[in-house]
Length: 362
Image (tube, rainbow, N blue to C red):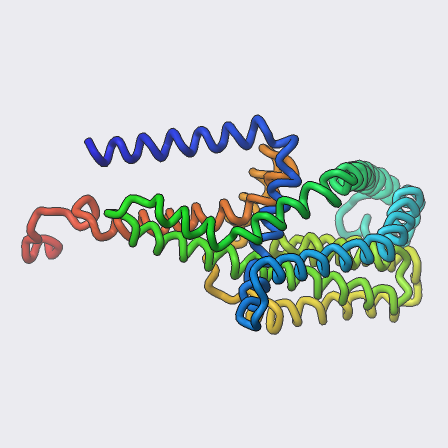
């Protein structure tokens, strides 16, 4: 009965937490963002404390520097990105039409002999596919831009989020100690072990992946801008940001930049090849340098599970869901591995009946 009560308690607590997220998700963004910011910056505060800073001085120093860098980045980069995004959306129908024309010229003469499909059918099919893709991409970009403007509102960005991050970062160690004091003594060791594994998975992935995204976004943006690709800064930074989802960022960035490069540079294939080289180098750096050094191989988050968590939480809770998807996926993964280990060590798996010699020889 004790085990049943414990299971019932945790199931009720989980249901209440999900209901809380669902009901209050429209107003949770600055608080979740502040919590995420405090979690990301806590190791920096601990390191400053080891250098002789008090917790208050370390917290104030970190947040002031962060706000200054963030505001400068917004002032310097946001107008450029806004202009490129507006231009990209405005030129998207023309880009699609030119890309369709080039593809038809390249493969139109060979297609009937190979597949039996006429050039007119090819143009119609390409027009439908590219038109639908352009419509979807344009709508997505507009929604992201309008959502970004809502997210970056004055209240949530410059007031609530920094204040929440300040108090959480200031009291982080005290909160951890209080939570530890509330744990049931009989299960404290197990809970602390699981919490440590969750923290290792979340910290290893989130902190490392944020660094990877920033480095890749900067590399792609600079590389595409040096190549001279139209909207290169927007495409490069966008590819870096969505590199948080494994394989998706590089794939989307490569497809979009190749389409723009073909329209812009054709028939000068050297510059199209240069775009491929930029993404090839980026993928080599990500797979062989950045991921092993910054993220590690043992964070316990499978790419498929991560993508499912991001889509599921984003669908259920919007942008707030995207912020909590990775920590939630890491926690569920740790609990699933713990449950599996308990199951494999239990009699339910091993059985209680003695093995009969020769039973498998029949």
